[in-house]
Length: 190
Image (cartoon, rainbow, N blue to C red):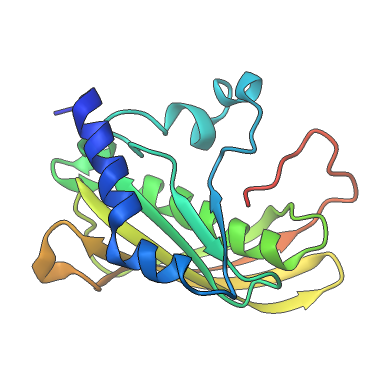
């Protein structure tokens, strides 16, 4: 069942009022960003993650990112709706890989001078099924920066939904990201 306008408001309210959101907002080392908001509106309809995925029943509202400059700590809080299932009630593995790539790239962006990172290599390990209609937190950190390249690792955890599964890791990943020579026409995730 796709999300309705009222459930969009409900998801947004839960995201804003979540205990983790409040805790991260109180951490003076972290900056907050609303993912995809820096993408020009004219470009969003042509983009998978900033456009067609951010919709009722999918990634219902744009995720919230909290990050340290330098990529030391990075958190992405997001909600996955029912319309992103590979099987009823379970998020599609391709979507989970996409969200890992987006989050790891956001962490790499925080570590690079121009705040833009493109993927060179991504490795994903699936740990358990990921329920839909649930909140998640992607936790990442930069493990190495060398010039215009960054290596990042992270994991996607169930934040809430089925509370007996809260805190369980559904995906772990590592990525190698590059700040391209020219960032003209590109945008920063954070």
